[in-house]
Structures are given as structure tokens and as C-alpha cells.
Image 1 (tube, rainbow, N blue to C red):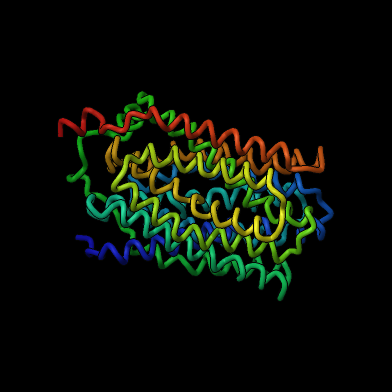
Image 2 (image 1 turned 45 degrees about the vertical axis):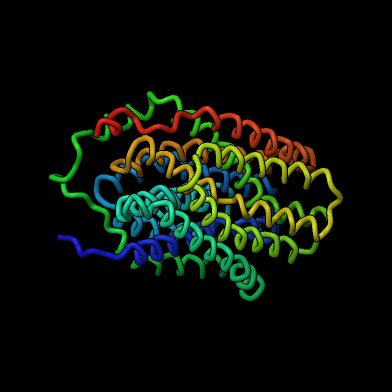
Length: 397
């Protein structure tokens, strides 16, 4: 018999793992300029590696979700932490664009699929009672946001103090040492307790649901916007004449505001319809981007934009995860959220890669800003008609 772990322990450990995994991903844009300068690459090479990372993360998320649903999140998280550390260590020694793509793209993409929302939120959804689920998902995201916030000055301090390559090595060690945090997230289900529905039936049920596809398409916008900003925003600010510290401060503000934003959106999800909240969130994000590119650019506008974006940064995740649980139940939540996350990461691939491609071709990010605004408006329109009622199988139960 498994040892019972308190919901708070589950939430804290899961939140720290998310914070470390997402925090390192959040600061990868800080490595773009020093690494490309040292290796003699253009921005497209670095951007392609991060774009590949997003794509692999998304494509692998259903697989890691299946493994977690079948064998428990603990094992998947432990393997993910080790893979993340190995990917960062190899990235530090990448001497070619191909090596960078294999380490920072392929391996870290696989590691992210095993250490972030699909696996952690799936475990929390199963280990925490339904009436506390919105609180737990929001709190785990908020704790993860604290980790992201702390990672920004930590990474910049490491880069300044020991150089970008040694900084990647230090982050690799931190991820590898996070392995014990996986132990409390033991959500294995005894075969005797499993419901009659098989995994194949659960996937078929979801793929035949129109709202599942709308959620997937809408989530693409989130991935596009966040991946573009995370990878290119510091470089964009440098191009506009701001010192490097401004980009660091902006990313830190995003991460800090994300703490409050993720928790708040998670809490709101227990009081209001999640599909409507997601539509409002995307409208807010698109409006913030439009105002940012149209209004005069100064330090105040940069920091205000970073704050608003931070409030919406990862608020989509507990709402989306909660919506999937609400409609399809939690037995295969890791698998089903993994399929939804494919859309998010396809958007992430396009956001990072097109950012580098468009900049190298035009020496400007203007077209990518416009695309980010338009996909945000489209996402808001796609979420509104989603049928968020529980499927007939759950209504009968």
C-alpha cells in the first residue's frame, strides 16, 4: 500500500519541479547572444534549436502522459530531471548547429515533456480531492512561477560571473539534483481500481469531441506567443537600444507577475466557466501586445507590458487542464492533456523559429508581433463555443 502524502506536499514538490524546468526554459533567451557570438552563428540557428525543443516537447507530451497514466508520474519525472541535466550539459559543449539542435532541441524537449504540466498536473489532479483541485493547480503554478522568477537573476548572474557555458553546466547540476522531488508524486493506480474505460477508448472519446479540437487549436496561440517572447524579447530590446539589464528585468517581471496570475486564474476557474476565462485571457494578451507595438517605447512601457504578460503567462495551463478534467475526467488526464499540448507546442515551434527566420530576413520582428496579436484574437474566438459539459459517460456515472 502506498504511503499517503498530504496535498500540500504534493503541490509544493510538483510546483518546484515545474519552477526549475520552466525557469531554465524561461531564461534560454539570455543565452542567445553570447552563445551565437562565441560560435559565430546567426540567430536562426539558435532559434531553430529552441523551436525544435518546443516541437519535440509537444509531440512527446502525449507519450509521457501515457507513461504517467499507466506507470505513475514519479518515474517519468525522475527520468525527465536526469534527461534535462544531460541536455543542458551537452548544450554547453555544442560546437555546431546540429549538436545544439540535438541537445538543446531534442533532448531538452523530451525532458520538458517529462517534467512539466502534463505529468505534474496529471499527478496533482489524481492525488488531490476534486473540490481542492483548482486551488492545487493554481498553487502549483504559482510556486512554479516563483522558481521562474528566481531563475532569471540567477542565470544572468551565472552568465556574468562564470560565462555562458559554465552557467549551463551549473543549471544542469541543479536539474539533476531535483530528482528526489519526484518521490511524493506517486499517483499509481492499482489495476483493480481502474475504471472500465481503456486508454484507447479515452483517446477516441476525446478525438471525437469538437471542443477537444477547439481547445487544441486555441492552445496553439499560447505556445506561439510565449515561445516568441521567451526566446526573442531580450534580443528585441537590445536591438531597440536598451541595455541587457532591461531584458533581464522584463523577464523577471514576467515571472513574478506569473506567480500571482497563475494562482488567480486557477482560483477563478473554480468560480467561473473556464472556457470564458480562457477567451478573456487571450483577448487581454492580444490587447497588451497591440498597445506595446503602437505606443512609444521606453522603460516604463517595457515593464508594464512585461507585468501584463506575466499575469496571463501560464494562467492558460490550469484552466486548460481543468477544462479537460471537467469534460473527460482524470483517469487519463496526463494522456489527454498531452494531446492538447501538441497544439501549444506546434505554436511554440512556429513562434521561436519564425522569430529568428523573419528577423534574419527583414532585420525586424514587426511581422511576428502582428502574427502574435492575430493568433490571440483567433484563440479567443475558438474557446467561446466549446461544449464544456462532462461527457455522457461521466454524467451517467
